[in-house]
Each structure stands twice: as structure tokens, then as C-alpha cells.
Image 1: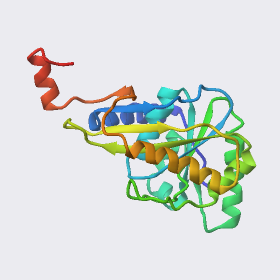
Image 2: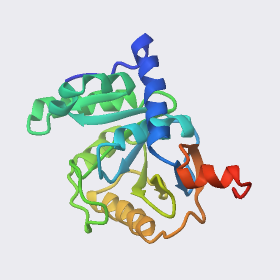
Image 3: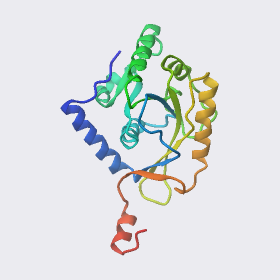
Image 4: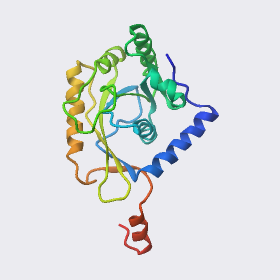
Length: 225
């Protein structure tokens, strides 16, 4: 297993780089619903749509005040080892011994104050809006061994009327650990609500990103909102 290795000079430089990269690529990170306050460890489970999800989680941890960690397939973490510096650690899902080791490690991380363990129950990238979600039992096992609060969050990358895309998050209701069906219904509920959004009404801007040409031009003309 590859453990998380947060901190150190390289970790701090990577932290700054990811923040700049995210803000330059997106117009903003928007949240609807209440992000739980920092406190005891919690399990956060999300749909997995594309490569940017890791950088998005990095920004989410900052705005929520969480000490974030993310479970990642070992083959992928070996390719992108630098992600361990921002909280990724590995699992080999087809190796029972490795899976047990990773579950124990996750349980210890969740004993830390302010910790948040991110997991993508689908196990791989899926097209946004593909329902029902095809979820694996790993999230159920993590909830069972850690016995912490579980929070569903839906993720959507979308264009509205602007040049750059917005990242939208829909936060669901926290719940105690349960069977896989609980996680299935919890995540599908927030995914459906998020897919129905056609404007940013009801969302709160948490990370302000780059403006497009039209927005900059409107500012010059004194027409910005």
C-alpha cells in the first residue's frame, strides 16, 4: 500500500500549484447544501466523472476546513505518485490482503480530527447522468469499519452562459453507516437534483476562478453584475 504523505516543501508547492491550476481552468466552485463543519472524521462519497475530480477535492477540503484524504487504485497512484502529497493513498481492489490493509489505514485516518476520507463508489469514471449508479461495496465496508458520519456529494462540470465551465456540488444529508442501498439512494438523490439545475440559483460561490473574455469586457464597459 502507498500511504498518504502530506506536507513538506514539495507538498506545499503542489498545494499552491493545484489551487492556481483549478482557478485558471474553471469559472468557480459552487456549492448547494450545507457542508458539515470540521469536527470528527467523516466519510464523503461522490460520483466520479473525470480527471479533474482529484483537484476539485483538494479545493473542497480547503473551503470546508477538512483534512482531506482520498482512496485511489494503486496502479493509478503509482503513475501519479505526487498525488500522495495531497492526501491520496492506495488500494489494490483485487488483492484481499491489500484491501484489508487499506481499510485499516483508512480507519486510522478517520480517527484524526477534521479528517475527511473521499471515496468514489463507482470505482471508475462514469459519464455524468448515467443512472442508476453502478456502485461497488467498498464504501459500505469503509462505513462499517470506521463507524463515522457519511456524506453524499454530487459533482457536475457544466457550461452555462460563460466561456469557462463551472463546478457544481450538491451536498446531501449526512447519515450513519448502513448497507449499500443507503449509499446508493443517498448519492443518486443528490445526483438527480444536481442534473436538474439549469442556473446557479441556490448555489454559493466557494472558489472564484478565471473570468472569460465576455466578463472582462463587461467589466471594462461597467456592465458587470
